[in-house]
Image (cartoon, rainbow, N blue to C red; front, side, top):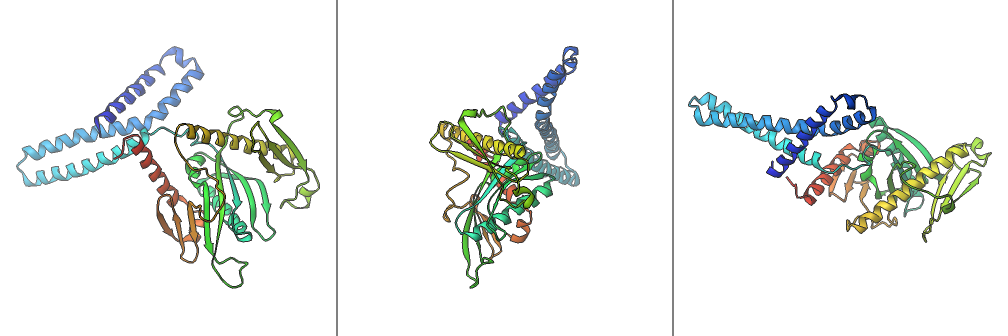
Length: 365
C-alpha cells in the first residue's frame, strides 16, 4: 500500500484506541448518549482497523520469510519461504484492495429503506406487462435479502400489466444495493398480445429514492393541496366504496408540479402518510440532483423520458441475455434473474462504482 494510505490508517487506528480509552472514563460511562455516540464511531472504524492490523502482521511475516530466503541454504526451507512470500504478498494485495474501498466516503443513505417507482415507457400494454415483471423481480429479490416490501400505489392496465407501481422496500442496506437500479430498462421479446410473433422493443422507467426522515425535508402546508377520491385500484369492492385514495399536488414555488397518488389501502390516513413519504423522497432526490450539478458532478437523472434509445439495461428474451450498458456486462439465464437473482448484476455494479470512485480520489489499485 502507498505510504499516504498507511499513514491515514495509522491515524484511524490511533483514533480507535483513543475512543476505547474514552469509553472507560467514569464521566462517559455515566452519560448514555455520549457513550452510544463514541461506541458507534468505534464500530464504524473497527473493520478498517482490523484490516490494517492484518496488513501489518502480514508485512512482518513477509520480511521474516524474505530473511529466511536470503539466509537459508536448505533447499526445502528455501522452498517453504518462497511459498510463504507468494502467499503473503497476495494477501497483502487483497487487504490493500479492501482497505481502499473501506476508505471511500460512505453514502449516508446506504442503510436506509427505499421507495421504488416503476412506470411504463414506450410500448403500450407490453411495457405495462414488463413493469409488472420487474416489480415481481424486485419483490423476490427483497425476499432473498430478508427485506419487506409494501405496496403504496398501483395503476393497472386491465390485462395484468402495471402503468405505474410505487412500493417501499424496508430492510438494512436496501439503498446500498438497489440504488443502482434507477434508470430506463428496455425489454426485447415477443409480446403475449402479439399474434404474429414479432419481437417488440419496449421501455419502462425505474426511480429508486431513499426514504427520508420527516425532519430532513420541510414541506409547507401552503405549498401543496390534498385531494381525496374513491379508489379505483385493484383492491376490490371494499376499497372502492370509500373515498380513501389520496392525491397530493405540490407546487412549492417552482414551475413544475409534483403529483403523488396513493390508493393501495382502505385507510385515507395511511394513503396520505404514504403519499407524503413519496413526496418527501422526490423532493430530497431533486435537491441532491441540484447540489451535484452545482458541484459539477454530472449525473443523468434516474428517470428519463422512456424513449427506446435511452437505456441502462436491456432484457433480451430471444437471446436469453441481460446487458447492463453502464458496465458493458452480459449475463445469461434471464428467467432466473427475473425471479430475483439480481446479486450477480448488482455486485458487478458495486465493484465498478467503487473502482470509479477510487480513481476519482487518486486511490486506484
